Every structure is written in C-alpha cells, then in structure tokens.
Amino acid sequence: MIFTKYFYIVLFLVFFAGAVTLFWSFLRKMKKDFTLKMLSRKILSQQKNISRPVYFSSFELKKHIRNNHGFAELDEYCEELFFHPEKALKKIQKNPVLTAELYFLLEKKVKTRDVLERIKNAKLSRYAHAKKLFLEATFALEEGDLMAASEDCAKATALFRKEKAFYEVAEAHLLMGTIYRISALYDVAQMMFKTAADIFDRFGADHRKAETIGNRGMLTAAQEIFDDAEAYFLEAQNIYASLKQKVAHAQIINQRALTFLAAGNYKKADELIKQARFNGRGQQYNVFAGFNYELESRSLCAQKKWKPTFVAAKTALEFYQKTENIPGQLETLMLQAQAAFEMKKPKQAETFARQAIALFEKHPSCFHIANAYSLLGLIFLRQGDLPRAKTFFMQSLSQETRNDRRNGMAIDCANLALLEKLSGHQNEADDFAQKALEYAQAFGEDELYQLLKNRCLS
Image 1: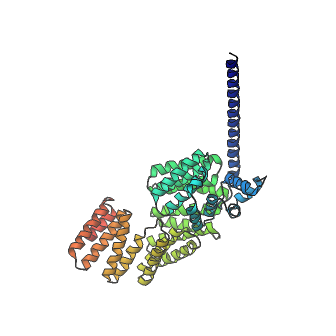
Image 2: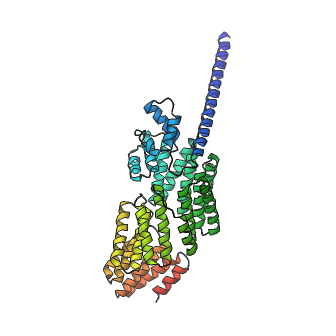
Image 3: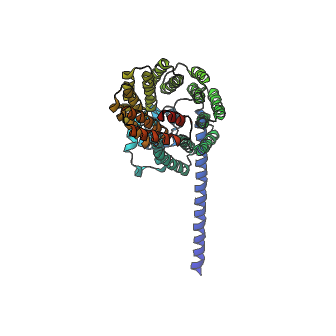
C-alpha cells in the first residue's frame, strides 16, 4: 500500500512538472511569436519610404552573425545591414541561401544562380529551403517554365506557412499570382494577388501592397477589362505618390500607358509615356527607362512610324544592357529588326534578328524566339532566296509547335504556303494553306482567320 501511495504522489509530481514545463514553453513560444511579429511590423513600417531593394530575413541574419561573429547586441547593427544588402553580403559568406538572396536583391542574377546550384537541400533548415525554392521559382518564371515555377512556389509557400513567415507567404502569393496571370488562369491569379495585398496591408508594407495592386491592374488589363485595370493602377499610383517613391510611381504610369496601348488608344498611351519619363540613375531607373522607351517604340510600331520606332528601341536597348534584363533586350532587338525590315534595310534587320537568336541561346527566357526565325524567313523571301527562307520558316514553325502557339503556327504555315506556291509546288502550298486555316480557326473565325483565309485562298 505504501508503494502504491508514493507511486501516485510521484506520478502526480511528474504530471505537474510536465504541465508546468509545457505551459512555460507555450508562454515562451507566444512571447517569441509576438516579439517576431512586432519586430516585423516595425521593420516593415520603416520600409515605406524606401524604393531600393531591402533585405527582409533579419532574424536569419541575426542568428547567422551571432553564431559566426559572437556579437552580443545586434539590433542596431542588423538594422543597418537590413537596408544595405551589399553590406550584409560581406557578413554571410558561410550562409549560401542568404548569400543567394542578397545577390538576387542586388540584381546579380548570374551569381545568384551559381550559388543556388551549389546548395544541397539535405543540409538546409525548413526556412532556408523555402527561400531557395522561392528563388528557383522566380528564375523558372523568367525562363518561361511555368510548371516548374508553379511547383517550386507552391512548395515554398507551404514551408513559409509552417515557419509562420507570413511576410514571405505574401511574397510567395504575389509570385504565384504572376505565374497564374501569365498562364492565363485569371481567377486563381486574382485570388493570389488579393491574399498577398491583404497580408502586406496588415504588416503596414504599403509599397508591397501597391506593387500587388499594380499586378491586379496588369491582370485585368490582360482580360481586356480596361476600366478596372485603370482603377487598380490609379490606386497603386496614389500609394506610391504618398510614399514619394519616384521610380515605382513612374513604373505604374508605364503600366497605364501599356493598357491604353493594348486598347488601341495610342494618343493617350503616348501622353502617359511622356508623363512617366524623368532623368535618373541606378539599376531600378535603368529598368524603368528601358521599359518606357520600349513602350514608345511599340506605340510607334503600331502606328507604322518606322524610323522613330527604331530610334526609341535603340534607346531602350541601351538602358536594358545596363541591367540583366534579358527579355527586355530581346524584345528591343526585335523591334529594331522589324523597323529595319519595314524601312527596307535587310542587312540591318538580319543583324538584329541574329543577335536576338544568339542572346536567347545563351539566356533562354519567355521571349518567343520563333519571331526572329520568322523575320529572317521574310527577309530571304523578299530577296527571292526561297531555300533559305524555307529553312527559317520551318525553324519558326518548330519553335511555335513546341510552345503550342497556334496563331504563330498559322502565320508560319501561311508563309510556307506562299513560298511553295512561288516555288511551283502547288500541292504542298495547298497543304500548308489548309494547316494555316485550321490553326487560325482554333482561335475562332476572327481577324487572323479572315486575313489568312483571304490570303491562302487567293
């Protein structure tokens, strides 16, 4: 009986001690979570008037510096590093994921890729693994691999949620929204952007909220809901104006110009392009200015003003070449090639088209390289060099087929039909003409279908 009595007393004491330990652990966890959230909000509120890239993973940065440098008081020190990624970079050479992220924020994409490729997932913490996946998703999106981008971003989002890294969850939703916008899954993209905007709003990160609202504008513009797009852009523009973020404010005006350009309102687009323009310097400014002059070139191209199209595209390319914006460089090379072709300068047009192909082969992107091959085909077709023209049209058709771009396939088949007809191969011409109509009809009997029908059956 004595044994039984003491047994229950010991059992009670063990239970009580365990309960106290669990309760104390719970209180500590609550305090830690509350402290992290308050610190997050403080840091994010300080970002409101900062337009340059900033480093957010301050907790990971502190942990790394404490482990490797032994600093007792880190708050003030890390706050300085937080706003200066290039300074933080010097302190974290032994932390590859943070190094990769800082290179990315500094827009050193080649170095970012090099670091990411050397990282072994097995040795990463859950948070670091999520960061790595997020960066890989960003690169996959840039290269046009939407499936890989979506998968990596979804995994990153799940890991960030487990880590209660809610700001990073918002960033992942913003990236996922962009992926779905490009994939034309508009309803899902809208939900992702709304979630991201709500989280940024709770953190007081007004500049990121404005960025997300701007993306909602791009989404509705892609759906050709132009009034809604203009409303979103104006909301974002007002936020940036209140934060005195000049580059971001000008970028939104660029997006408004692009929307009016898509709607065919060239006069309003041209007004906004000029309104956005200002003199500046730095990486962010170069990206903005490149896009601004690219928009001007596109507007002039749509109006068939070929000489100023060429000049604006040349200026855009000069700005893009100061950055690692490969898609922008490819687009402006092709604008110059198109303008030179229309001005009957075939050698110049061929040079720019070949430059685009060479650049794409080194740095694949969302750019449709088929456009360059198709233009080369047109150049040699105009010169009467039918065998070389056919080679390039077939290369273009191969690229379009690989990407399942039916409208591009239709145009290539129409060009091949004309080429075969000129070569005296009527049966082959009829076959390509029929394929052109079938591909165009996949989009409905719209303007492209009617155009090709008249051309192929004439």
